[in-house]
Amino acid sequence: MDKQDGHSAGEPGGVRLDDPWYDALTSGWGELDGGAEATGDWGRRQPPPSAPLPVPEQRPAPHDEIYLAVQRSAAFQEVRRRYRRFVLPGTAVFLAWYLAYVIAATAAPGLMAHRVVGALNVAMLAGLGQFATTFLLTWAYARHARLRRDSAALDIRWETQELTGGNLR
Image (cartoon, rainbow, N blue to C red; front, side, top):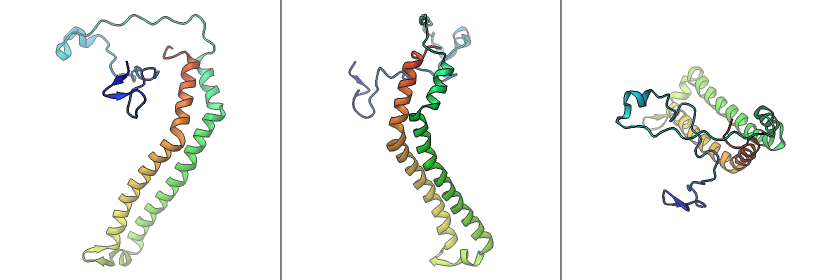
């Protein structure tokens, strides 16, 4: 199947049908314990459960060992290092800016009450600056994740998926 929802598989927003995470259900989502079918909830009959997947006869390594090996890998450590290099300074700067605002509001009320334009004073500008900083930091984090970490993390996910043999447990 080449198209899903009007997007080609290669286009942004397209669905890769070979994505191992595409059909994986989040715990508790879409899984029925049989109660809804028996009581007639949702007003329709549920489809019969699918046939169980065959269990591979021999696994190369238990999942615990695979995940520990991935955690120790240089690629995973690089993704974590890139994450920490952005998040720790960003958090420190934002908290310092917030604490400076709170301390200035309590220690220097005269400065904060100083009018800038009309009814707009320093305190209001600093408060609006807090909102602007929040949105700016969120945008910067999303951009950093997209440009510096997402592709490497996806490569690690694919490699882990291949090592564990798919979604089988």
